[in-house]
Image 1 (cartoon, rainbow, N blue to C red):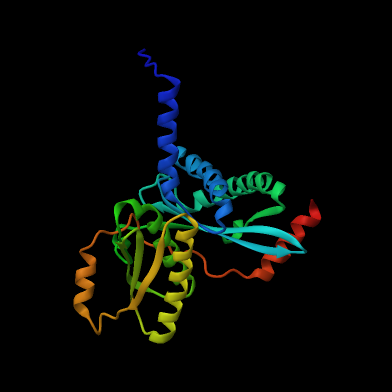
Image 2: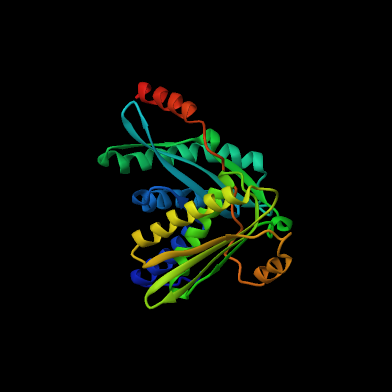
Length: 277
């Protein structure tokens, strides 16, 4: 038997590389203060499923602060997208994730209680779906910014895509481009919707979310401003679709996670949980 010895420093480097790779799978949209805690805990879910031969394509999480009986609650819903090449059937995986999610919820709660929060992962509304090769190009997210801004702007692109899906806006292509003027990143957002929409309302919706996420970039320490937004229909400008699809695509297609949850149902569930504690 051959034994390979490596230094502790090298081992930690390998371990960190593995965890960093897993965190790329996890996409979190919620209060920034909880990003690190939530991402770290959901890494356990990815590890547990991959140990069983389940290939995880993406874990999309949405966090929201709500108030229940004057308690501050971090409410989390999401979706796990697995590869169709995974070794287990979807129904088998559904039985596995419930206990894991409840365990993760307990761990997050231990972390957030000292700052006055409860944690509530809505297991019943946590979606599990299977990706298919033929669906990969259904939605295109194009990020075209200077390299040093790519990581943060990809997060912004994902957040905008989730917001649009939550507001029942289907799209073919979402482009976020940026250029530097001195040291300021000027951002332009272009949307190519699928279906009929009132253009004025859609532009207002897109501008609102684009401004929100540009503000997020500034909170992350980047000098960024929203330059412009545009909604383009292929019916008017068919050549734009061809041009945009030649650009680099972001890592994966936008996930359509659950739409706005029924807060009253959440309140009832959480009250029941508090009364049992």
